[in-house]
Image 1 (cartoon, rainbow, N blue to C red):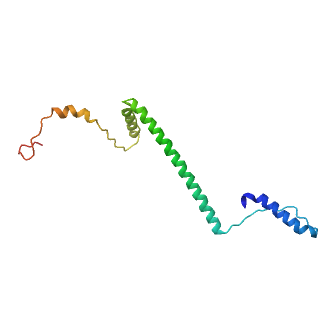
Image 2 (cartoon, rainbow, N blue to C red):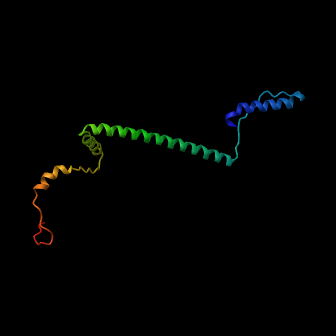
Image 3 (cartoon, rainbow, N blue to C red):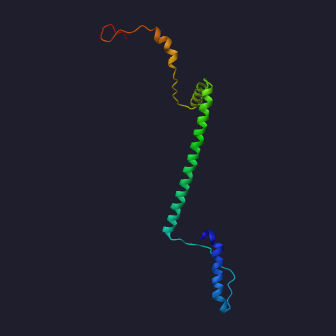
Length: 134
């Protein structure tokens, strides 16, 4: 009703003109100024509008996720072409994290760095031999 107030006003004016012309009364203007809806209808309309907003928000979020996944896929392709790109990205992330206060950063070392140390190490005696060192 609110979106078609003009046409409703014209229809009402025509109906009033048909009824009042035989008496010599002329209605100059009819306006629908206020429409009062029952509380149940107001609630139903509000619920419908909220559901429509939530549906649009979900669609927008899904589109964002799709764009993000495509961007990540393209980034993975670019990083796979440059062997050091992943390490550089990791260092960049560490730099970003370190800018925050009270951050604990765990910096993993590749196992390959320790292989030389592990191969030169003498083997420990089996447990229970009595010659275990701490």
